[in-house]
Image (cartoon, rainbow, N blue to C red; front, side, top):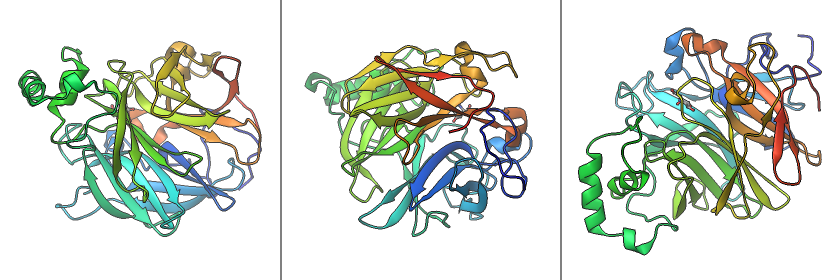
Length: 361
Ligand code: DGJ
């Protein structure tokens, strides 16, 4: 295989075997001098939108040339398993826990044949970066735990009872008729919905799970326990009613920078951006960070070049180099989904992500 010397956003991205990389909604990990790229393994056709194989992992030392390391987390053949073949596994992200020396994978899990109703977080662990990972469990986070930024007067049994009546058994609210708070209260006892997500390890070693909750209306930012395998009971509701999916985050200059999408299924929409001085907020929304047009599809900032955010990668050893990662979805033939990696340019007040058809570090 001829080695690659530049990024080609939106193009076929061959691995060491010349095969288009199959790791969608990527999460990156840098460990002991090597990058690991985890993502959803898709198969051909619409069936590729379900987990038929599992989470694929690749490794690289230059971010351009990737070696296929196989399936990190395989779906199960046991019909009783939460991750039985045919379930939905999305947005896998791996972090390394220096204390336990375990690699911990978090992902969005939907149980087989239930569409997007289950809205669960899944956890799997491994002793090595590339796996195989062992599935631990799936659940809805923070059952019975109040968010830190929910006013005391909202935290009562009466409000929960009223919310349960108005929300009923709904797990989705595309018309936005329910209030995010009602959805939140109705899930208080059973645990909060967790769909699109990422995980982030801060400089002090504390890790956070950021997930789209409340029928996608609100983002939750939840601290993880010291072993990174559970929620620590400290979390906030962020951007209530803003329907942000595809969260991605980085830290630069002591501040937290955030990218997400709007909520329109597999179709592209305008990207969101935000900044905060503390990860638990308060968060301030910034404008759409995208600039320019992807000539392949004619799409610019109003459609995020045809993509949807998935991760922000700080480039190791390169000051101020951050890469924003996006997916161009092809839901009719999921395996043909494309990757758009673009440099982030920080300004006085925010950051920009400008389209490039070809670029290098
Ligand atoms: C948008 C999400 O960002 C994706 O991860 C996936 O869940 C699709 N919706 C499904 O329509």
